[in-house]
Length: 343
Image (cartoon, rainbow, N blue to C red; front, side, top):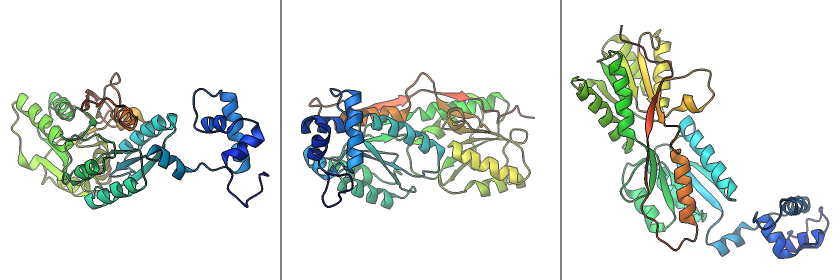
Protein backbone atom coordinates (compact mmCIF):
# COMPACT_ATOMS: atom_id res chain seq x y z
CA UNK A 1 0.00 0.00 0.00
CA UNK A 2 1.39 3.43 -0.95
CA UNK A 3 1.50 6.23 1.66
CA UNK A 4 -0.61 8.43 -0.65
CA UNK A 5 -3.32 5.82 -1.16
CA UNK A 6 -6.40 7.28 0.57
CA UNK A 7 -8.98 4.88 -0.84
CA UNK A 8 -9.11 2.74 2.30
CA UNK A 9 -8.16 2.82 5.96
CA UNK A 10 -4.61 1.74 6.77
CA UNK A 11 -4.51 -1.37 8.96
CA UNK A 12 -1.89 -3.19 11.00
CA UNK A 13 -1.68 -5.73 8.20
CA UNK A 14 -0.40 -2.97 5.90
CA UNK A 15 2.26 -2.00 8.44
CA UNK A 16 3.18 -5.66 8.85
CA UNK A 17 3.66 -6.09 5.10
CA UNK A 18 5.87 -3.00 4.84
CA UNK A 19 8.03 -3.68 7.92
CA UNK A 20 8.19 -7.46 7.69
CA UNK A 21 7.09 -7.87 11.31
CA UNK A 22 4.10 -9.96 12.33
CA UNK A 23 0.76 -8.29 13.04
CA UNK A 24 1.14 -9.25 16.69
CA UNK A 25 4.54 -7.53 16.90
CA UNK A 26 3.16 -4.45 15.17
CA UNK A 27 0.24 -4.35 17.59
CA UNK A 28 2.46 -4.68 20.65
CA UNK A 29 4.88 -2.05 19.35
CA UNK A 30 2.08 0.45 18.78
CA UNK A 31 0.81 -0.23 22.32
CA UNK A 32 4.31 0.44 23.68
CA UNK A 33 4.71 -3.03 25.21
CA UNK A 34 7.97 -3.57 27.08
CA UNK A 35 8.84 -6.84 25.34
CA UNK A 36 9.42 -4.99 22.04
CA UNK A 37 12.78 -3.25 21.66
CA UNK A 38 12.94 0.53 21.46
CA UNK A 39 14.48 0.34 17.99
CA UNK A 40 11.71 -1.90 16.69
CA UNK A 41 9.00 0.28 18.22
CA UNK A 42 10.52 3.42 16.71
CA UNK A 43 10.74 1.81 13.25
CA UNK A 44 7.17 0.50 13.36
CA UNK A 45 5.79 3.83 14.58
CA UNK A 46 7.65 5.74 11.88
CA UNK A 47 6.30 3.39 9.24
CA UNK A 48 2.78 3.67 10.66
CA UNK A 49 2.92 7.46 10.44
CA UNK A 50 4.25 7.42 6.90
CA UNK A 51 1.36 5.18 5.88
CA UNK A 52 -1.19 7.39 7.63
CA UNK A 53 -2.20 4.78 10.20
CA UNK A 54 -4.64 5.92 12.91
CA UNK A 55 -5.30 3.70 15.91
CA UNK A 56 -8.86 2.37 16.02
CA UNK A 57 -9.84 3.55 19.49
CA UNK A 58 -13.39 2.26 19.06
CA UNK A 59 -12.18 -1.29 18.57
CA UNK A 60 -9.73 -0.92 21.44
CA UNK A 61 -12.44 0.37 23.75
CA UNK A 62 -14.65 -2.61 22.94
CA UNK A 63 -11.80 -4.92 23.87
CA UNK A 64 -10.81 -3.07 27.07
CA UNK A 65 -14.24 -1.85 28.11
CA UNK A 66 -12.97 1.75 27.98
CA UNK A 67 -10.78 4.08 25.94
CA UNK A 68 -7.24 4.80 27.10
CA UNK A 69 -8.35 8.25 28.16
CA UNK A 70 -8.67 9.78 31.61
CA UNK A 71 -10.90 12.78 32.27
CA UNK A 72 -9.88 15.52 34.69
CA UNK A 73 -12.51 17.98 35.92
CA UNK A 74 -11.37 21.32 37.41
CA UNK A 75 -13.33 24.47 38.20
CA UNK A 76 -10.93 26.99 36.63
CA UNK A 77 -8.12 26.14 34.22
CA UNK A 78 -6.68 29.65 34.59
CA UNK A 79 -5.79 28.86 38.21
CA UNK A 80 -2.10 27.97 38.29
CA UNK A 81 -2.78 25.44 41.06
CA UNK A 82 -4.95 23.40 38.69
CA UNK A 83 -2.52 23.91 35.81
CA UNK A 84 0.29 22.41 37.90
CA UNK A 85 -1.89 19.46 38.85
CA UNK A 86 -2.86 18.92 35.22
CA UNK A 87 0.83 18.79 34.26
CA UNK A 88 1.57 16.20 36.97
CA UNK A 89 -1.39 14.02 35.99
CA UNK A 90 -0.78 14.29 32.24
CA UNK A 91 2.87 13.29 32.57
CA UNK A 92 2.00 10.33 34.79
CA UNK A 93 -0.68 8.89 32.52
CA UNK A 94 1.29 9.58 29.34
CA UNK A 95 3.94 7.18 30.65
CA UNK A 96 1.23 4.52 30.80
CA UNK A 97 -0.17 5.22 27.33
CA UNK A 98 -3.21 7.25 28.40
CA UNK A 99 -4.40 10.60 27.10
CA UNK A 100 -5.79 13.27 29.43
CA UNK A 101 -9.12 14.94 28.69
CA UNK A 102 -9.57 18.28 30.54
CA UNK A 103 -13.02 19.66 31.37
CA UNK A 104 -13.57 23.07 33.01
CA UNK A 105 -16.66 23.11 35.24
CA UNK A 106 -16.53 26.78 36.34
CA UNK A 107 -17.61 25.87 39.90
CA UNK A 108 -21.07 25.04 38.50
CA UNK A 109 -22.65 21.78 39.62
CA UNK A 110 -24.87 21.45 36.55
CA UNK A 111 -21.84 21.77 34.26
CA UNK A 112 -20.05 19.27 36.49
CA UNK A 113 -22.88 16.73 36.17
CA UNK A 114 -22.96 17.19 32.40
CA UNK A 115 -19.18 16.75 32.27
CA UNK A 116 -19.40 13.47 34.20
CA UNK A 117 -22.12 12.22 31.85
CA UNK A 118 -20.08 13.25 28.80
CA UNK A 119 -16.95 11.58 30.13
CA UNK A 120 -18.89 8.40 30.85
CA UNK A 121 -20.50 8.41 27.39
CA UNK A 122 -17.04 8.65 25.84
CA UNK A 123 -15.97 5.56 27.79
CA UNK A 124 -13.12 7.18 29.70
CA UNK A 125 -11.10 4.78 31.82
CA UNK A 126 -11.36 6.95 34.92
CA UNK A 127 -12.04 10.42 36.26
CA UNK A 128 -10.03 12.76 38.49
CA UNK A 129 -11.92 15.73 39.84
CA UNK A 130 -11.94 18.64 42.24
CA UNK A 131 -15.72 18.83 42.68
CA UNK A 132 -17.71 21.96 43.46
CA UNK A 133 -19.41 20.04 46.30
CA UNK A 134 -22.66 22.00 46.16
CA UNK A 135 -24.32 18.65 46.85
CA UNK A 136 -23.52 14.92 46.92
CA UNK A 137 -25.11 14.38 43.49
CA UNK A 138 -21.88 14.31 41.39
CA UNK A 139 -20.34 11.66 43.66
CA UNK A 140 -23.57 9.65 43.64
CA UNK A 141 -23.67 9.85 39.83
CA UNK A 142 -20.09 8.60 39.55
CA UNK A 143 -20.86 5.71 41.87
CA UNK A 144 -23.93 4.76 39.81
CA UNK A 145 -21.91 4.78 36.59
CA UNK A 146 -19.21 2.63 38.16
CA UNK A 147 -16.40 4.61 36.52
CA UNK A 148 -13.25 4.65 38.69
CA UNK A 149 -12.67 8.10 40.18
CA UNK A 150 -10.49 9.90 42.72
CA UNK A 151 -10.83 13.38 44.21
CA UNK A 152 -7.95 15.87 44.20
CA UNK A 153 -7.83 18.54 46.89
CA UNK A 154 -11.26 17.66 48.26
CA UNK A 155 -12.50 15.07 50.76
CA UNK A 156 -15.68 13.01 50.81
CA UNK A 157 -16.74 10.07 52.97
CA UNK A 158 -17.75 7.99 49.94
CA UNK A 159 -14.70 8.60 47.74
CA UNK A 160 -10.96 8.08 47.51
CA UNK A 161 -9.14 11.38 47.80
CA UNK A 162 -5.71 12.99 47.97
CA UNK A 163 -5.33 16.44 49.48
CA UNK A 164 -3.25 18.66 51.74
CA UNK A 165 -3.80 19.17 55.46
CA UNK A 166 -6.18 22.13 55.30
CA UNK A 167 -6.58 22.65 59.03
CA UNK A 168 -2.84 22.61 59.70
CA UNK A 169 -2.30 24.97 56.78
CA UNK A 170 -4.83 27.46 58.12
CA UNK A 171 -3.24 27.20 61.54
CA UNK A 172 0.33 27.75 60.28
CA UNK A 173 -0.64 30.73 58.12
CA UNK A 174 -2.50 32.45 60.93
CA UNK A 175 0.11 31.60 63.56
CA UNK A 176 2.82 33.16 61.38
CA UNK A 177 0.86 36.41 61.16
CA UNK A 178 0.11 36.38 64.89
CA UNK A 179 3.79 35.83 65.67
CA UNK A 180 4.54 38.99 63.67
CA UNK A 181 2.25 40.92 66.00
CA UNK A 182 -0.88 41.08 63.85
CA UNK A 183 -4.19 40.71 65.66
CA UNK A 184 -6.69 42.03 63.11
CA UNK A 185 -6.30 39.19 60.62
CA UNK A 186 -8.82 38.81 57.81
CA UNK A 187 -9.69 35.25 56.79
CA UNK A 188 -10.62 35.58 53.11
CA UNK A 189 -12.48 32.33 52.59
CA UNK A 190 -14.36 30.90 49.63
CA UNK A 191 -18.14 31.11 49.41
CA UNK A 192 -18.14 27.73 47.69
CA UNK A 193 -19.20 24.65 49.62
CA UNK A 194 -15.91 22.83 49.00
CA UNK A 195 -14.64 20.81 51.95
CA UNK A 196 -11.39 22.81 52.15
CA UNK A 197 -13.08 25.95 53.42
CA UNK A 198 -14.01 24.31 56.70
CA UNK A 199 -10.56 22.91 57.48
CA UNK A 200 -8.73 26.13 56.65
CA UNK A 201 -11.20 28.17 58.70
CA UNK A 202 -10.83 25.82 61.67
CA UNK A 203 -7.04 26.19 61.47
CA UNK A 204 -7.43 29.98 61.47
CA UNK A 205 -9.71 29.86 64.53
CA UNK A 206 -7.40 27.42 66.33
CA UNK A 207 -4.44 29.79 66.00
CA UNK A 208 -6.51 32.73 67.24
CA UNK A 209 -7.58 30.73 70.30
CA UNK A 210 -3.98 29.73 71.01
CA UNK A 211 -2.93 33.39 71.08
CA UNK A 212 -5.98 34.50 73.06
CA UNK A 213 -7.33 36.60 70.19
CA UNK A 214 -11.15 36.67 69.92
CA UNK A 215 -12.54 35.68 66.52
CA UNK A 216 -14.51 38.51 64.91
CA UNK A 217 -17.33 37.81 62.51
CA UNK A 218 -16.49 40.80 60.32
CA UNK A 219 -12.97 39.42 59.78
CA UNK A 220 -14.24 36.18 58.23
CA UNK A 221 -15.31 36.97 54.67
CA UNK A 222 -16.36 34.68 51.85
CA UNK A 223 -16.05 35.36 48.13
CA UNK A 224 -16.33 33.21 45.02
CA UNK A 225 -13.26 31.24 43.99
CA UNK A 226 -13.78 32.35 40.38
CA UNK A 227 -13.95 36.06 39.58
CA UNK A 228 -12.71 39.19 41.28
CA UNK A 229 -14.66 39.21 44.52
CA UNK A 230 -11.63 40.66 46.28
CA UNK A 231 -12.21 44.03 44.62
CA UNK A 232 -14.94 44.98 47.09
CA UNK A 233 -12.85 43.64 49.98
CA UNK A 234 -9.94 45.85 48.89
CA UNK A 235 -12.27 48.88 48.75
CA UNK A 236 -13.41 48.22 52.32
CA UNK A 237 -9.86 47.69 53.56
CA UNK A 238 -8.61 50.94 52.03
CA UNK A 239 -11.64 52.96 53.19
CA UNK A 240 -11.24 51.66 56.74
CA UNK A 241 -14.69 50.06 56.94
CA UNK A 242 -12.89 46.70 57.12
CA UNK A 243 -10.15 47.12 59.70
CA UNK A 244 -7.32 44.61 59.32
CA UNK A 245 -3.54 44.58 58.97
CA UNK A 246 -3.06 41.08 57.57
CA UNK A 247 -4.89 38.56 55.40
CA UNK A 248 -4.95 34.78 55.23
CA UNK A 249 -6.41 33.98 51.80
CA UNK A 250 -8.12 30.67 51.02
CA UNK A 251 -5.95 30.25 47.92
CA UNK A 252 -2.97 31.84 46.24
CA UNK A 253 -5.24 33.01 43.42
CA UNK A 254 -7.42 34.92 45.91
CA UNK A 255 -4.28 36.35 47.49
CA UNK A 256 -2.92 37.45 44.10
CA UNK A 257 -6.22 39.14 43.20
CA UNK A 258 -6.43 40.97 46.53
CA UNK A 259 -2.81 42.07 46.26
CA UNK A 260 -3.46 43.42 42.75
CA UNK A 261 -6.55 45.33 43.89
CA UNK A 262 -4.74 46.82 46.87
CA UNK A 263 -1.86 47.94 44.66
CA UNK A 264 -4.30 49.64 42.27
CA UNK A 265 -5.56 51.60 45.28
CA UNK A 266 -2.08 52.74 46.23
CA UNK A 267 -1.41 50.20 48.98
CA UNK A 268 1.74 48.12 49.34
CA UNK A 269 2.35 44.53 50.40
CA UNK A 270 3.85 43.85 52.91
CA UNK A 271 4.42 47.47 53.99
CA UNK A 272 0.71 48.24 54.43
CA UNK A 273 -0.80 44.74 54.55
CA UNK A 274 0.65 41.26 55.03
CA UNK A 275 -0.79 38.44 52.91
CA UNK A 276 -0.46 34.65 53.14
CA UNK A 277 -2.06 32.40 50.53
CA UNK A 278 -2.54 28.66 50.22
CA UNK A 279 -1.30 26.38 47.37
CA UNK A 280 2.42 27.16 47.17
CA UNK A 281 2.23 28.33 43.56
CA UNK A 282 5.23 30.66 43.77
CA UNK A 283 7.42 28.00 45.34
CA UNK A 284 6.61 25.51 42.60
CA UNK A 285 6.65 27.90 39.63
CA UNK A 286 9.35 30.16 38.21
CA UNK A 287 7.57 33.52 38.53
CA UNK A 288 8.99 37.07 38.61
CA UNK A 289 7.27 37.68 41.96
CA UNK A 290 6.42 35.64 45.05
CA UNK A 291 3.81 35.46 47.76
CA UNK A 292 4.01 33.78 51.15
CA UNK A 293 1.90 30.66 51.15
CA UNK A 294 1.07 27.30 52.64
CA UNK A 295 2.56 24.53 50.53
CA UNK A 296 3.08 20.79 50.57
CA UNK A 297 6.28 19.72 52.30
CA UNK A 298 8.96 18.74 49.80
CA UNK A 299 9.30 15.27 51.33
CA UNK A 300 5.58 14.61 50.79
CA UNK A 301 4.03 13.28 47.56
CA UNK A 302 2.00 15.78 45.55
CA UNK A 303 -1.74 15.20 45.98
CA UNK A 304 -2.20 15.13 42.20
CA UNK A 305 0.41 12.38 41.80
CA UNK A 306 -1.05 10.33 44.66
CA UNK A 307 -4.50 10.64 43.08
CA UNK A 308 -3.20 9.67 39.62
CA UNK A 309 -1.41 6.61 40.98
CA UNK A 310 -4.52 5.54 42.85
CA UNK A 311 -6.74 5.97 39.79
CA UNK A 312 -4.35 3.93 37.65
CA UNK A 313 -4.57 1.08 40.16
CA UNK A 314 -8.36 1.29 40.14
CA UNK A 315 -8.43 1.20 36.35
CA UNK A 316 -6.25 -1.91 36.29
CA UNK A 317 -7.66 -5.40 36.51
CA UNK A 318 -6.72 -5.90 40.16
CA UNK A 319 -9.04 -8.54 41.62
CA UNK A 320 -8.19 -7.56 45.20
CA UNK A 321 -10.47 -4.79 46.53
CA UNK A 322 -8.50 -1.70 47.49
CA UNK A 323 -8.87 -0.16 50.92
CA UNK A 324 -10.28 3.38 50.86
CA UNK A 325 -7.59 6.00 50.22
CA UNK A 326 -7.53 9.01 52.54
CA UNK A 327 -4.27 10.68 51.56
CA UNK A 328 -3.59 13.92 53.47
CA UNK A 329 -0.15 15.40 52.79
CA UNK A 330 1.65 17.41 55.45
CA UNK A 331 2.12 21.14 54.80
CA UNK A 332 4.44 23.95 55.82
CA UNK A 333 4.65 27.73 55.67
CA UNK A 334 6.74 29.14 52.82
CA UNK A 335 8.05 32.69 53.11
CA UNK A 336 7.52 34.53 49.85
CA UNK A 337 8.20 37.96 51.29
CA UNK A 338 4.62 39.27 51.56
CA UNK A 339 4.46 39.42 55.36
CA UNK A 340 6.09 41.86 57.79
CA UNK A 341 5.92 42.67 61.52
CA UNK A 342 3.04 44.87 62.62
CA UNK A 343 4.08 48.51 62.64
